Amino acid sequence: MGFGVEDPRALMREFLRETGGCAVIDGGLATELEANGADIKDALWSSKCLFTTPDLIKKVHLDYLEAGANILITASYQATIQGFESRGFSREESETFLRRSVEIAVEARDEFLEKCSKASADANQEKTNFKNRPILIAASIGSYGAYLADGSEYSGDYGEEVTLDVLKEFHKRRLQVISEAGPDIIAFETIPNKIETQAYVELLEECNIKIPAWFSFNSKDGINVVSGDSLIDCASIADSCVNTVALGINCTPPRFIHDLILSICKVTDKPILIYPNSGESYDAHKKEWVASSGVSEEDFVSYVSKWHEAGASLIGGCCRTTPNTIRAISKVLRGA
Ligand SMILES: C[S+](C)CC[C@H](N)C(=O)O
Ligand SMILES: N[C@@H](CCS)C(=O)O
Ligand SMILES: [Zn+2]
Image 1 (tube, helix red, strand yellow):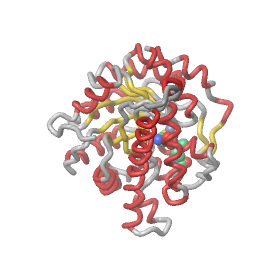
Image 2 (tube, helix red, strand yellow; image 1 turned 90 degrees about the horizontal axis):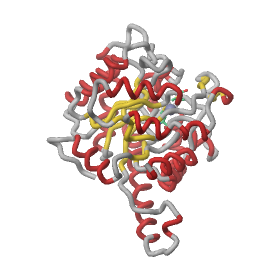
Image 3 (cartoon, protein in one colour; image 1 turned 45 degrees about the vertical axis):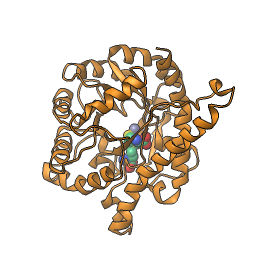
């Protein structure tokens, strides 16, 4: 899908018009890869599947489309050139994995739309989710903390040596390669601090990236981003970027989301996105979620119409949410 270079916001306006004002983001990708048997207890986390089980990534994308998603987030969250090279892959191979993450999602969309057009002749089509609908591919860019593979995306504490220039150098080539692979949106996700927000904004401009972007922060107190930096400051920096078509919150417990939406509303008139996690906490050492600490799927879904009323127009799930969560979100929003 192509979008006007002069007005990147036309993308989101047109997309939300077509979806009736609110759209469904997919759910946890890594979560669902694990549920389908992938072993991602690894420094590359879900991006390992780009070279071990790419077909499984496509299957999970298709499951989320079948559940009702309008937006697929690619498997590139923890996919970095530096991470792949440290595992012995060449620069060229590493860049191919980045491009593949976008291609796999595009292939899933094409296959899904093909199934929809076949199903349209079927009298039972109304009973399925195989109905033609607008679908965007959002290329994930996880934070520097994700690459560190030690849970730093939940602290945003990178140490003094990680300056703005270090972060820009870290992300630059990856951002260029992913942008050239042709996603509809760049999804900067789980952004833990202000310095990384600034790095992304400067890179988009300096690399002359013409693809719309979203900025999604995470919080552990319902007020600030996880590093303690002001959410208002981070959101204002993101809002000022000409590429930005939406901003919001992901991988954050559901109980914090309502107040965070209200804060973001104060600094932007762009669409607000939210895709919370289940509220469980992550043990980065064991690479496991602490199961008892989250909310049930039912409770998660009971928040959805309140988030929508508070101002969120793009709603999905992050870690530990599943196609069932997305199916339920889709039902709430499509009935809204
Ligand atoms: C969003 S977290 C659960 C991703 C995984 C983390 N960066 C790690 O490598 O442990
Ligand atoms: N987009 C990633 C997680 C970000 S925290 C995923 O769904 O696996
Ligand atoms: Zn997450």
